[in-house]
Image (cartoon, rainbow, N blue to C red; front, side, top):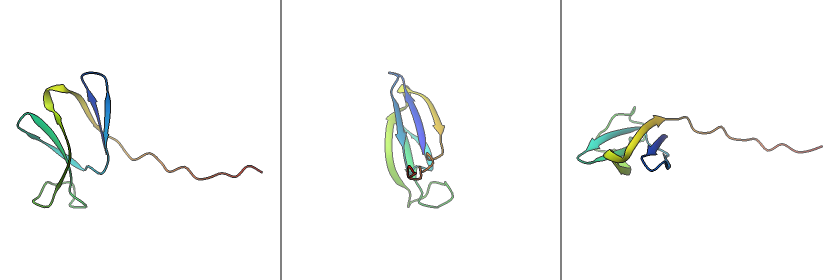
Length: 72
């Protein structure tokens, strides 16, 4: 998963992405579906953002799953 900070201050999360690449004026995020994070003909485009509006890109781990806790 990647966290993208946009120049207007908004934050976008791209889940399922394991890589990204520049494509002209866009930065595109891809899912290689287990192909060790490398782009291939089988990679699927998940999201694109205008590169000139991206402030930062950060890979983040998925948030931990919360276990249900019963009150006694």
